[in-house]
Image (cartoon, one colour):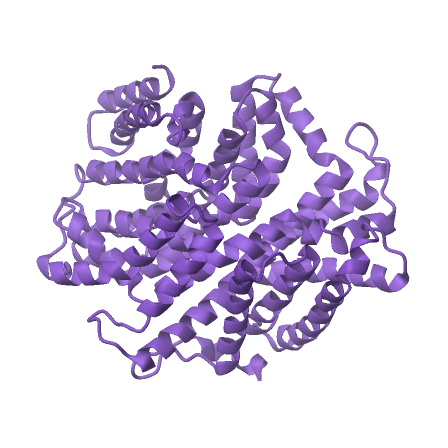
Amino acid sequence: MLSTLSSSTTGSDAEGVPRLHPAWVVLGTVTVCFHLGLIFYGLTPALVSRPIHLALALPWILILAARTPFERWSGWLLTVLGIAACGYIAFNEEALANQYGFIDNNFQMALGVFLIVLTLETARRAIGWPLPLVAVAALAYAVFGEHIPGQFGHPGLPMQSFVGTLTIAESGLWGSLTGVSVGVVAIFVIFGAVLNAGEAGRGFMNMASAFAGRLTGGAAKVSVISSALMGSISGSASANVASTGAITIPTMVRLGYPRTLAGGVEAVASSGGQIMPPLMGAGAFVMVELTGTPYTQIMAAALLPAILYFATVWMGINAYATRHDLRPMAAEDRASGKEVAITSLFFAVPFVLLLERIFLGGYTPQYAASIAIFAGMLLLFFDVTLTFSLRGFASRMAEAMVTAGRQVAVIGAIIICASLVIGVLSLTGLGVKITSGILSLSNEMLWPALLLTALACLVLGMEVPTTAAYVICVSVAGPALTALGLEPLLAHLFVFWFALLSTITPPVCGGVFIAAGMVGENWLKVALKAMALGIGLYIIPLAMVANPDVIRLAFDPFGAIFDAVKIALGLMAISYGVIARRAAWLRVVLVIVGSLVIFAF
């Protein structure tokens, strides 16, 4: 039975093959086939595909992730009822579309309320209380906001229309944001799962060690490069720390790096995966929906800032080399040229195919990713020695299916819950009121508005996942920033970057907690190192506003590169001023000069 299998989906047998129960492999395969099938089926009604997306996510979160007997049996009950509720929406799609979000009987009202509660509970079990609490607060405002005096009140919403719009119409739970999760994010999550099940991860590490292992601080720089590559397909700071950190952290410690520095390097390098194209932790695809900007333009806009981020970490490692003996990697820890060449094929072939189909073939990102997924699946037949193995293929494919199923479920739960918040903001007009408040507090000046937005992103990002924090913050603050003259894509990138700050900024810094646990060091000390190394995460969003050409690589490559070089020089000076062992006056001068280079020239 599924409820008894959660512990058997992890671990390894004597041969290192993951113990994956067939039931979860089958469910993962169904999840993968459904989302890939949507790319090739043709147009599927939103009220069919999106409820099925939620139905497929429920067992992974409510049953597999159950930690107590109560969670297990209640998870079964909620899963069965949830699948039935989603099935009702899908099977009655045509009739419900004609109701235009107005509930006309008690059964539909009960169904709608249940779906809202189910969404909240699924998100709570997936990622904890903060995001569901934000959603509950939004729902409470919608229900009771008519009793709030002044401009922040609203006229009131009929319950039949309010619940119906959120649950039986193509909005709210089943809105366009959920459509992005179904049709795009899930495809790239599957892509990452397939690559990670094969030898792509080893390929990333081997290429990084060949490129940077011989340099001063080589082990730390290998962490930076491998995390950038791994993060480009995983989009998860925590997963990145756990995967690349398992290799890089022990290597750094063995070479005599301070433990706090080893943990800080991995935490800050892994956090950059969420800003590195093509995946960007699902943020790129949400931006496509919210801004109407083509995916290729978003990739081009995000590329130079992401490179600047990792370059700043690289400079920070050089600065720490003035304080510590950061030795290169030992020769025996570096892969041979032959191994680098072979293992690099496992990620190079799917990546090249993905980019070729997008940029030369002119296909949509999700279609291109689907083709790359099939190429990645073919590579699962081979191991690092290019030995063909049906047994190895079956094991690796099973791992990919289970990983994809679980990750699609978690991201789906987050985005659907965030969609609930966005639906309330739209129905009540609260987003417009908050935008007016930001404009008023900032006295309609851009930089104060940016700082207010940054603070809001940081606070909210400490409580909810980056993508959800970005969606909520940009919904309320984005219009204010654009009203003050910021172009929409720049406003979205600014908000997205600051929503990411919580990965390395206390008191809630998930990437730091994991790295500190792996290195066995106090998390606050690791966080301080990570913040110093990742100073670009705090400065680059502001630098993008001061130097907007840096995101215009697709339209003005020379201007973009010029601004990127200028920002890089400023960041180098600031990084050395913050980290390097130099006289205090010189460090202050470096920070001031670096700031002037970025913001004044």
